[in-house]
View 1 (tube, each protein chain N blue to C red):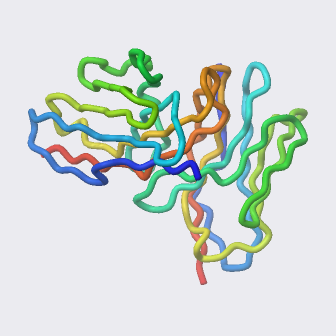
View 2 (view 1 turned 180 degrees about the horizontal axis):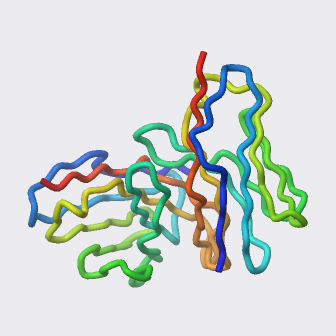
Length: 111
Length: 117
């Protein structure tokens, strides 16, 4: 079956540091890939997505590239802010549109 | 665009009572809505998928008689937790998809924190 594996947190960074959160997946077919962000006490917000191999999703300074050859969709941001502190979820969808989430990675950015 | 609301945001109830949670798509029609449950510091667990006008499809291990889902219109789905018990305490999140049949992107509500005493 489908699965998503992402690096464990928490990831603690200083402001303006470079952020990478690794995400790899196993899937049948060609799923779309997503990164969602969850701020404390809130639901999930779509951060970015990519629908096919070599697509790059980007939003708010975050980027992720759909790598079919390595089955990865790593999230990166060049300079994080305190406001980026949140839990980040990597996800893929199956042929029925159901999302399969990774375990989530908590990111803590300190001033 | 693509805003999803949930009501209530927080509810506390006594054991044995039933609680209804509403999920609305505010600016689009949602042919498919999903209900998730999230335990503290864990990922989301899909409970069920509902399509407007038809019965919900429940994931394995989810009691359909306990978690009643109704998707009566293209903008509203409800989850009723019947005879709630403390182990039902959790964060419940809904999401809505915009395409009929295959849903590519889901938009999430802000979640409802249920506490059963």
